Length: 151
Image (cartoon, rainbow, N blue to C red; front, top):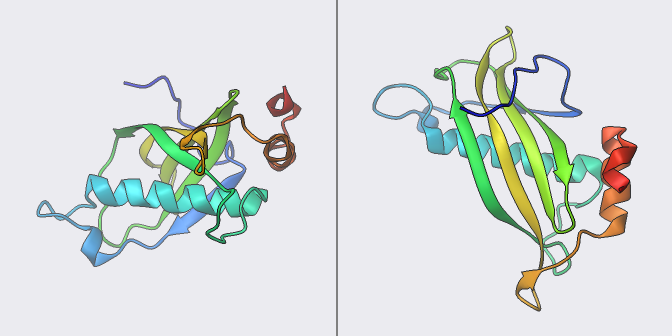
């Protein structure tokens, strides 16, 4: 089990509301773990846009790759549940960004899943990792209201 603690409702600077689709269900009639991973991915890219490190345009120069994902599944999501994903930067390294997330019920204090995803800043032309751009650090620190991210 991860050491991430429940944070409902206000630890995260960014929330993305998710529409649970019938297609997200599996044979057990709850949302499949793969769909939950897609919810987190959707929230993470929304966070990029909201923080200003990415404008949504696919182009060279915006490079991050997934290095690691850990998800603790706590409560099954059912069709009809109102879901949101909270996300924040937990740590900025030299080349890596660790995001903490929580998948929550929008209507009550219930946590469906939580975890962390580690992203690595990546230079597509050189096909290798690269240091996080300082302008990203500035934007993330401002968005998170956390000057420690500049260090």
